[in-house]
Length: 146
Ligand code: SF4
Ligand code: SF4
Image (cartoon, rainbow, N blue to C red):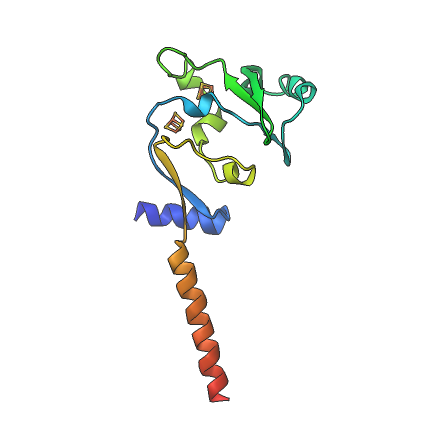
C-alpha cells in the first residue's frame, strides 16, 4: 500500500521514472567519488568550483581528488577514513539524505557496484512493452472493424 502510494507520488506528481529500493550499507563509497552537477553541466573547472564553495557548505567540504571524462571528481572531507562513517551524519545536507536519485543517471553517473540501494524503473519494462502491444492489438482490431 505504502509502496503504491510512493510510486504514484513519484511518477504522477514528481514525474520520476525510477524509484529507490534497498538501504544504505554504510560503505562510504558515494562520499569518496562525487561529481557535482551545477545547472545542466557536471563541473569541469576548478575556478567554477571555487566560486560554488561560497554558495553552499556542502561544496565547501569537498576536495578535488581527480578528473575523468565526466568531470572533476571530489571526496567529502566529512567522511571518516577509518570508519567510513559520516562525521556530520545527523547534520548532513539534504543532498546526502536524498541520495541516490534519478538525476544520477542524467549526469552519466551510476551507483557503485556494492551500494545497498537500487534504482528501479517505477513501471517495469515488461509492463511498458505489454501496454504497447495491447495498444497495437486494439488498433488492429479497430482497423478490421472498419
Ligand atoms: S556530508 Fe557525510 S554523507 Fe554527505 S558526502 Fe559528506 S561524508 Fe558523505
Ligand atoms: S554507496 Fe550506497 S551503500 Fe555505500 S554509503 Fe553510499 S548510499 Fe550507502
